[in-house]
Length: 54
Image (cartoon, rainbow, N blue to C red; front, top):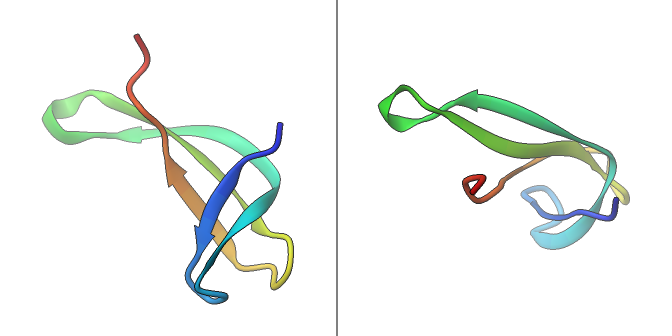
């Protein structure tokens, strides 16, 4: 799955390497979905919050 996120080190949108879906505690006690991976160019950890599941 090709997922794009914002790399704070490169200051550009880049593709995530080894992206996987994770969940974390959101506002109001519910769970939120996100993608977590590494920047293809510099190797910095990237995180992208996904929309709520319907």
